[in-house]
Image (cartoon, rainbow, N blue to C red):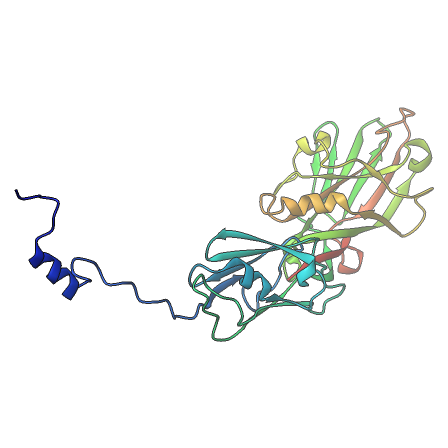
Length: 321
């Protein structure tokens, strides 16, 4: 009786003669060396931020252990013992510094360098044909001077009158009890290169004329960071401030030049300087608009329409590529 589970002797002979019959050939072993396709930052990139992370994109999936061991750097903050690793996918290695990088302390370039050595290997154990080195540059510390914008400088009276013409602007009260606040506008886009981060700005403006005794009768002169945009209107009088008030450190108004340091206020404006068209704008007013004594107490300052030597200006310290 024929047993169906027994193989036909002819088929047995054929299988012995051709043991691979009916099977696909085994895959060829991977012998292609991996390579670095791209890095972030790219080689030669300028203006890298302090919180940057490094990304290395390989040509194929890599062995994490030998690839991480192939990373090297002698730059402070990027040394192998100062970073950690994360794999976004099998072919993308991310290097995460443990702390912020350090910007250049002056206008000279500060260079960071890292290398992926040829010992980096793929999943098959193939190593790279050569190492790959990346150099990049962080932000530099710069300084610049910006003169105020005459067309946007001026003063606004509480009653709504606006004055943007002439070489002066004023703050204080008049003999009829009317009071005014002064406004200054600066264009950060005049800085070259463009600022990425502003550390501080010293605002300087020159006294043209003083009537009465505003420092005694009206209190401290306040510098407020505001934004009134491409046109000075009556609404600027009561605009909300973008930062806390900062009084000028003055006991009187007898000096020819007054100065106030502005830091966070200007930095906030840079964070939004694209939407504000690069403008940094200030309001000058006394802590009391009027003392109600029917006598004028005011200070007149030169505006951006004055001679160049008398125009208000900002001394800006900032970081840029």
